[in-house]
Every structure is written in structure tokens, then in C-alpha cells.
Amino acid sequence: MSDVTKVTIARGDGIGPEIMDATLEILEAAGAALEYEEIQIGESVYRRGILNGMEPAAWDSLRRTRVFLKAPITTPQGGGYKSLNVTIRGALGLYANIRPCVSYHPFVNTKHPQMDVVIVRENEEDLYAGIEYRQTQDVTQAVKLISRPGSEKIIRYAFEYARANHRRKVTAFVKDNIMKISDGLFHRVFDEIAAEYPEIEHETMIIDIGAARLADTPEQFDVIVTLNLYGDIISDIAAQITGSVGLAGSSNIGDQCAMFEAIHGSAPNIAGKGIANPSGLILASVMMLVHVGQAEAAERIHNAWLRMVEDGIHTVDIFKRGISKARVGTRDFAANLIDRLGERPVTLTPASYEVGAKASFAGIQLKTRNDAKKRLVGCDIFVDHTGGDGDAMAARVLPLVQDGLKLSVISNRGQKVWPDGAPETFCIDHWRLRVMGEGTAAVTQNAIAALIVRMADAGFDIVQTARLYTFDGAPGFSLAQGQ
Image (tube, rainbow, N blue to C red; front, side, top):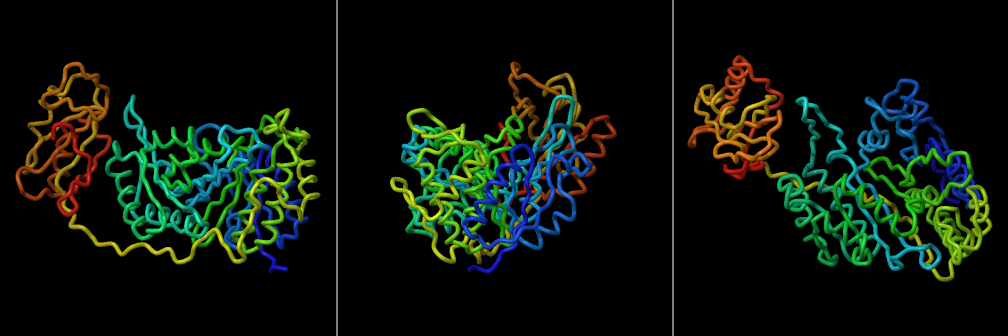
């Protein structure tokens, strides 16, 4: 018998309590050596005025056990409520989201019978940092943060996962034909790290065509690593085309803690009806058992689940006449699985987990950073202004630009409107004024600050500024049209 592992559990909202009860029954019947600490999270906690959906005592439990099995929760609609999943992942450093997506042909209806793809999603940054602003009457902004350390960790994790699980290829999905700096960094780091794993094939795809090919021919993929937003979208696509998003579990892995969950939501429309498919949380619990070193129990559950799928014992979401043999509810699903513990699938590939296998890889080290020479070369100044055009805006700004600075370009929603703007360009109330240094003279913070003061005194409503730097002479900013 393995040493007992303490696990924090949360029953969640909607169908969460039903599928958690089913999962815990199965874990007990399979002989998993687990001891539970239960916490309250989700909608009821939000309603008590705790805006992140989790009380301080719950955090204490997670820090004690470092393992979290979580049922889905409901985040109330409306301002002020932050996604609890995003909060937990960021606070506990759960940087890697792992979502296996497998077809179970011919027992679960799918157009892709050979599909076996693992999505490795970056979990801490990107647009999910939740940094947003309303800057004018017409314009809102979301800040996309991509870091070299964050990219290194998730990409190396993907290659280590592929190596440990005998996968043949890792594909990166990016959009660096448009976001050349942010997604471009991820692409560069991917190429650097891929070179360290010569036995594993690697490729990069633009996210739009990559997602299209994933939906059409998923067989061409093995492990996909990508940024947070893209990963969220494509993992749901991948899970759904296996037959049902309700079949997929996921792990969220960090250096110190891990969280395991179904990828679907709380489905309040079917809560209490006893018809929810618990498979996502059951398979997430299998991933949890592997993570804590209980491979034997993980195999028993996973193989019994596969055998039940073969036997056609299905919940309503995957039930199909001519394929399924019996339609069962949540509790009967669990009971049938428990009856099959110790059995193995006949047609589907049996699950096999190496003793001591873990879902995390110790010792992932970041590369030593070689600091580039950073030089201030200008500033973008964003103003809220209604009416006029680029020429009129330039006429107001040019007399204020002094101290070795020059007005380089004015744009509106990224489209150049001065100099030589097109008269057909539709302008709104959000203008970007790019100010650069003249010649080779150094630009100083004081010169920029003085310009901002002069503009404010002249009545400009400045909503944002962004300093422009070069790093070893290369621009650390997107070039404006015509610059």
C-alpha cells in the first residue's frame, strides 16, 4: 500500500457535487491511498463578498496538501468577480495545463477515430493576466504579457512530457506573423529549446491554420504547446471532436503544487438531474494518482473506465443508438465502473503507468539571461480626442515637441494618419503620437516628462504613455506604418 497522500477537494457548483461524489466513490473502491481536506469555493463564496471565490482557510489547505482535486465552479456574471481558476493557477504557480484528448472509436461517436493529442497550455500569463483598461469613450484595452521565463518553462515542459511519454512530435501554435514581438518571443524560445531535443520532431504553425487542421486532421498532431488564450480555445476544440468535451480531464502543474479538474464547466442547466458525465473528473483523478505516485490505482481506474466505454455503458452526452448499449446516470456510471475494477479493455489500448511516474518534471531550469544593452529612443503618447484628423492633431502637437525630440508619426487604431495619411481612414477618439529622438542623441526621461507636462497644460487628455527602447540596437516595439 502506498503512503497516504493528503488531497484538498472542492465539490464546486452545478453538477460539481454529483460528479465529485461519483469520483470519490471510485477512488475509494480502487484502493487509492488518499486522505481528503474539503474546502468551499465558487459561487456561494463569491456571494459572501469574497471576490476571488476562495476564503483564506482554503488557501491554507492547498499550501498544506499541495494537491487539489476540483469540481467545476460557477463564476457570477458581472463586474468585480475574477475567475477562480485563473487566480489559483497564478497564485500557486501552476504554469502548465495538460489536456489529453483521445478518441475512443468505435465506442464513442467521432469523425476522428485515430486522434490522440495532448495540449500543453501556458497557464500564467498572456491576456489571462486580466490587465484591462477603458481609456476613452470608445476604446478599451487588454494587455498581453508574454515573458521569456514563462515561455521557457512551458516549452521545456512540453518537450520533457513528450520525452517521458514516448511522444514523437511537438508543435507550437503562435500568431507571430501579426504579433511579432510577443508571439515572436515564444517562437524564438521554442526553436532554441527544440534544438536540445533532437530525437523529437518539432514544427511551428500559425494558430489559425493550426486550429483548422486540428479540427480537420488531428491525427497529424501529437503534443501541441501554445500560449494561454490559444490553448484554452484549442483544447476545448480538441476535446469536443474526440466525441464530447465531457470526457476530458486536465492537470495544472507547478513546481510546488498541482490541481486536477475536468475541463468542462458547472453546467447548471442539468445540475441535480443525475445525468452528468463524471468522466472528465474521473480521468483528472487518474492524472492526480499518477502525479502522487499511485500508478497501480490509476491503471485500475483508467482501464475499468475504458472497459466500460467498450461495453457501451454511456451517459446521455455520448449515448448513440447502434453504438451504446445502456444509457446511465451519474451514480450508475460510477457503480458500473467500480464493478469493472481489475478488468482491462479488449479493443482500446490499455492504460499503463510506470511506477514513480509523475506529471511534473523536477529541475526545469531557466537559461542564464544575457542582459541586452537597453536604450531609450522615444515614447508613444496616447490621447483621448474627438474630431479632426491627423494633420489637425499634428498642428497642435508639433509646437510642443522640443528638447531633441521629434514627432515621428500619428496613428489611430494602428493606422497611420500623419504624415501622409489617407483621407478615407476612419478615426475614433484614441490617438497614438510617436515621439522619437532626433539623430543619434540620447533621449532622456526628463525630456519625455517635460513634453507630457506641456501637452497636459495645452489641454491634451493623455490616457497612456509607453517608453520605446532598443535592446542591443534592435527595436523593442512594433514599428509604426511609415516609420
